[in-house]
Image (cartoon, rainbow, N blue to C red; front, side, top):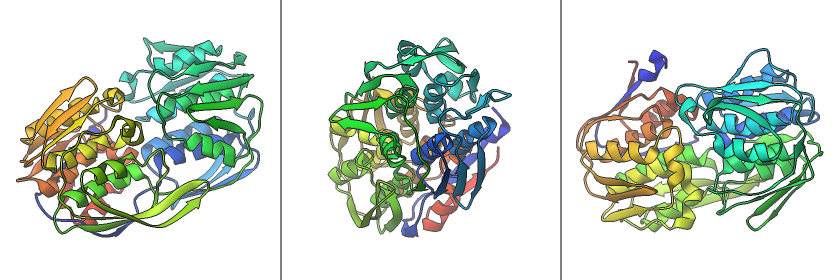
Length: 439
């Protein structure tokens, strides 16, 4: 890992958040706009694209496979689609950086091409398990070599894929989307059954580009051999990025913040539901639909929070937001219990352990369990914590400074650029006293 990884945040205690902010575009939708726009026939215009490292890794990969892409410039990208079979073999391995979404979704898409590719990543991504996509893809006829189930992945082309019916062992939008992308190249109808609802951006965008996808209850089906038609995509602000400011306002007295044009897809709304259960004062306005995705302005005003048992059905709807929710729990009155969140163990870091360790350093009673965490809320102290290079852990601990008794130092923050390149600037504008130092 480069010395860039040693970026450090120093957060001074206290303050509150106020004003109107627009956080960067949704990461999940930005990834998919590049992937599906590249495979479409015609020119796809994207606005609100997230110019973070993860989405840029996806963009670079498709450029390397011969797709002409203009931008990004001020969030605008123009993709000159090459059609379902127009990608070309890259002359080097594709570097996915820190992006689990890029590598998992591309493993499915590339399994249906007629050329070989290698998907690699940084040291963090190289530790993340890929068997969850390799195994079902193998059942479809794909051939993928790996380092004991971890990257780099060597995807063999020129294999006929066959449709399968697959029950996901763990609710995962990345695995579902990977199999949908492979299913477009498979003979027959691929059927995926989810144990719980997960984000449905892939299904919405596929339909929006004219590729039929059947969704009935917990089952999603896609037939191979279809085509995609170019469209216009307006990427809403990312609710995962908005979450840090929602939590910051919810825990700091005197706060009143409005987050503009945020995606409120029903498969992503868990954080709003959970914070409301804890007593947060959250209101939505200007609700509309853009490109098949619901959006709204989200206003959060301070109100005292209480600990809760987080309903297990909300877990898949808030899986990326839990580091910030844990900070809300640490500031709440009483005990918060999370179960059913094994998925958090295999994110950019083991987020359960990373947050439990950091909260304990800050004087919070937090105990990690196999599938969740138990947090007794109260006072947040001060100290030096390690984000382990995980962007969401770093930003969550930054917001903890609003309730802290002293300075919080957060190490290894460079990867915040993967999802939220202007986080320090926006947080400082809103009222957080945050300095960024290169290590």
